[in-house]
Length: 59
Image (cartoon, rainbow, N blue to C red; front, side, top):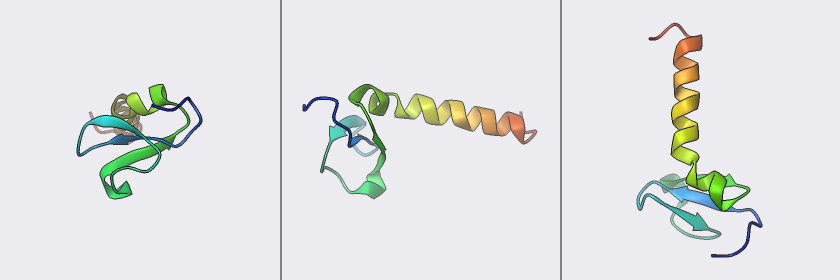
């Protein structure tokens, strides 16, 4: 893969990190600035969902 030059994505269809053009945007999360940030996309989404539930009184 290329260096950490932006345009990193996490593909939900293949469950892997992609750099640059890849699967359609409807099937992926991002873009992220680095490969490691894209690799953590699902964990970040889980954390944000949990925080949203707490803020909105859903336990």
